[in-house]
Image (cartoon, rainbow, N blue to C red; front, side, top):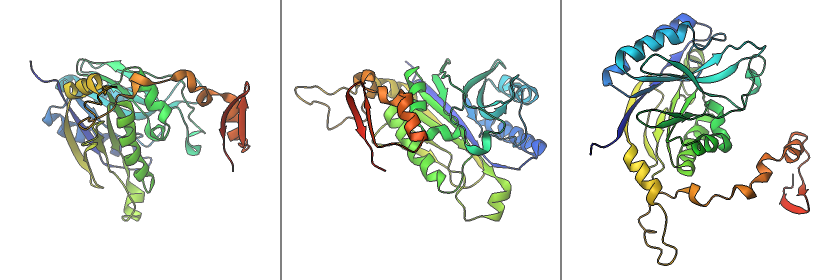
Length: 307
């Protein structure tokens, strides 16, 4: 039987603030170059247009859909999505080889600079394709483990992360991409935009670092970029991932397989009944009010945190 291999190409490039046409032209130019490598999926960064809210589907995705149809590939990216309401979403779009446009995932946690025009979403999705089940974590949502776990519980085998980060935040992006891959037993792929103006002013600043990550403990970081513009392609073995997820149990009596285990499938022994503190709104309110000391609920001692 032929191995189930999935080729993915990420685009990493400089985007100019408020220059929609430059950014769109640059994106299309790099996409036309990327399709020459015949990838199954192409990931472009978050906020790659650097301007206002866009309709999904709309003019931008129509242009990208033409490329997806001509080259039989999926295109994934992040955009500020316009809605019928006062505020929009920061959404990951998915364009299929048939030219269909879908919202794969919208960002859950907004940072301050986004809150004026955007709001956080509250739903999680996974999409089954002929190559793999895929999902997305939007940019800064990588810092919240609940987001990737929710997408993984829906069956995602590859989690795409369109992002635009810089500075020391990139250390977090790299570290957390590894963690999300291992703890959720999936591949994690991120494409990070480079802000043109700031990168010119601060060449010593940390930029880029788009990369590919696996849950295999003997090789978590597959490949990643530096601060350069360009493309990076990697072939992921889906059979290898699925086999590990089915065979990563250790014999309770003999401990057979412990020395050679490449990953531990966390989903076999989860205890969701004990995680209620994570969704307890009273506990969250105490954090929001800066009043976390000792938390009790229904006579049960959850935790003690001293600030």
